[in-house]
Amino acid sequence: MQILSYVIMGIGIIFMLFGVIGTFQPKKDFYYRVLVACKVDTVGFLTIIIGLAIRHGISFFTGKLLLIAIIMMVLNPLVAHIIVRSAYNSGYVPISRAVPTGEEKSSEEA
Image (cartoon, rainbow, N blue to C red; front, top):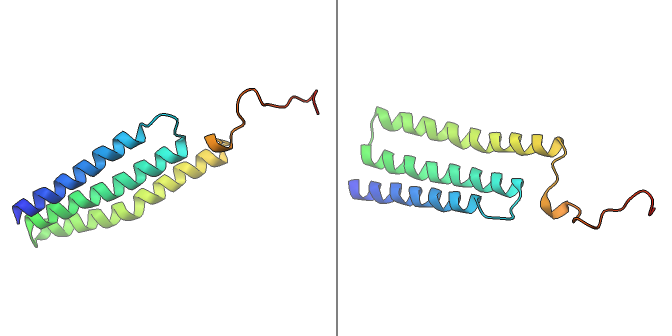
């Protein structure tokens, strides 16, 4: 069982590593980066928690891990949504909708 738990925890760490690398890709906007960070954090963390639960078996510690996992599953997407919504409400425009430089219309042309 310990080998299985180590493999599952390793998969979670590798998943989080690839997510960190994906977060720092050039030419990606804020919304993409928050989405990737939220998904990686939630799935990678849950995979590591599952590996720890398998390693320790059924115990009080596993119950604590389950409680932490439930809290994380609820709060992480909620916090990411709040961050993105506040950025959107403050006027942050995604790169795909931004006007390219040099094509801006001035009031004299209209």
